[in-house]
Image (tube, rainbow, N blue to C red):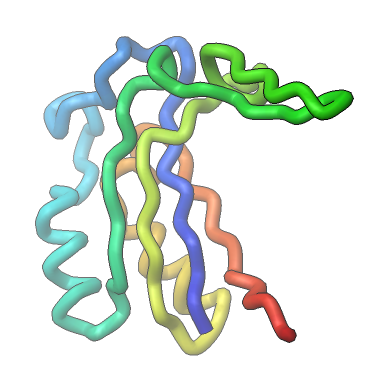
Length: 117
């Protein structure tokens, strides 16, 4: 099963994610990646450009409306993502809990729901 980890930070933080020193005892993200990769659980992941560069796209009445910024008002912003291959949600949660942003932000874990057809 594949799982998407949405790596989020608090909107109140600076435009850059908190530094390792700001995450009070959090594991190093490079160590997290190495462990997940070595275990064969890591598929891919990337950081995202700042939310100010985002565009929200809607089509209404046949017209494309592209507005600047995130799609919704929220206290947390998506800073990046990772895709994991795990045997269960519990395993994905366990791996996500070792990510440094679980200590200074929040990680949302969702199982992928493949299209059938």
